[in-house]
Image 1 (cartoon, one colour):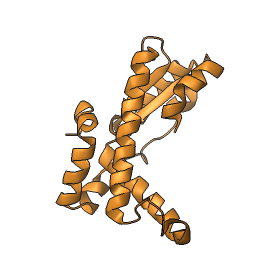
Image 2: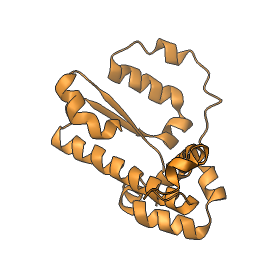
Image 3: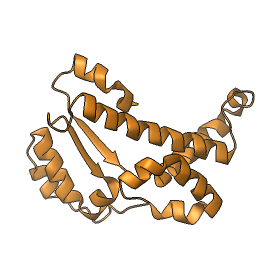
Length: 160
């Protein structure tokens, strides 16, 4: 929810910096819907009569819409608060990070103005993308619907 709190944070912590890691929205949607689905099932009585849909597809579409709104909000905040030019926001893709974590962690250290030595001396062979899961677990109709919901942002980041 930090995406929607940027103006408040900048007002109260003017020296704040933000890191935005963008991940394929379809992978995020699947992961988040599983997490939310588990919470709902553990508390089903709270959700049975609510307006919030509890089917798998309802959760997927809610999560897809939320991902899109977060991306749009970050884009909006980048423009209105000049976050990139003011060196307040560092943005990169999760998939790129998984291919070269040391590189991105060192760049993050530079962005945060901290010593990168801690990151240089580590082994990152355990870091790998998990994006294949959405391709394996979502059928073509669900993917079509999710692509439609998230299309502009998926395109912008090269996911479509």
